Length: 177
Length: 400
Image 1 (cartoon, rainbow over the protein chains, first blue to last red):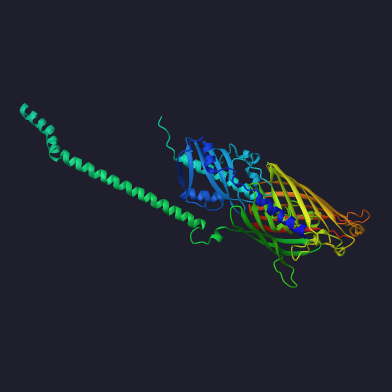
Image 2 (image 1 turned 180 degrees about the vertical axis):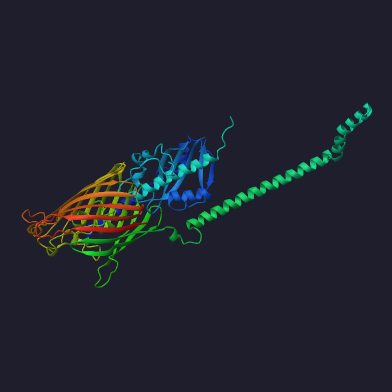
């Protein structure tokens, strides 16, 4: 009886003994790292009109916000986006440089499965990705067994960041020669 | 007509001077100009304040709308932190053994996040559409556990959970696998869906390397069922806890699209002490699950070793099976597969003809990533008295 009680309680005892943050990188640190300590002032892009429709098409659902915050310096833009994998939102940091995905990083992962998506062997597949003609990624991304929905969330966020960056660049005024 | 020189000069002077005289007459004085400028400045300031007010109102309205959209306004906090999901599948089997249509599984998931690190997860399943006395179906609780994040990479759970064995046992939503029916190895050797009551730890020890380890209820087989493992699941329903079991898995997912894993399980007594001729048992399982570009490949091997004279006398002391399943995605929406399955729940008796072989081939069509239509054919080549069960199957499945 005591033996059984002990083995059932063992995980609880281990839980109590260990404590740590479930955050891989704070969003502020991601931005600071991205812009070498000189983080530009944040701005927002509104998801309205055609942009709203395209966003819904990319995600398969409405984005849970009316606007998206971004940080931009010259042709580089940084985005902190959230998308639910299976049950809970995954916080993802993305950097787009002149229309190409420079970096994608899992900042906070709240699901109990699928954490492999944060590793470089997976995220490296996205480097240099851009939008194709149909607003999809220009390449195939190999998934992770048992993490299908987390992988899908990452692909959606990569596509959304590239699309929104393209929208920003559309609004840029060409310099006068 | 001629004009005198005097007349010309007079006309030119009048034309040039006329407007100047008029402008000078209408121009405000410096004092008036100063008043106008001040008035305009006040209007600019008022407009700026109005613009700022409008911006603040838009910001406030947007925040309110976003909060409302997220359910933070007017919704109970438990609803905000509760998740709902599910899956289901309808099968049509045209086989030698049956010609039937069956809503095989209707499943709902409920989850609740108590804190960032403490959550509840559950899965309730209705099998075969109707349950009750004399009906074919069952209502089953297949998951209900509380999980706690010890660290970012290590988690503990207690309750009723799925065992980390095989490919399908933990991930069996219809859009995630080929074939209408689950493969026979992960039905007869690994008794998917296989849930237990107990406690477990899981986590990641290095990039791509993860582990699971747990203590839980054991099997309760009997000689009447020839010690078949599928009949031994206690389903955490007043389960006999005289003799517990332990399961461990190590998994490598260090390359995108590749999973390699091995599980081992120890059962301290396969009959919970009810059969003096039976005793402990070991399960060993290993598999590969690969999806690289359009190419897919699954392979799994599982083997039970049961101690005791009882299982040995029936050849059930060794129960073993494997399958290999290559697949190819023609487009993101269309995929084809073939699978070779071989299994034997009485492999310990080399003289008996109890081995079964089955080949499946078919197609999956995903009109949406979470919805699938399936078709496959199956051909068996069974030894001994087992009749071959050949034919074809159709299915539709979904997850959300």
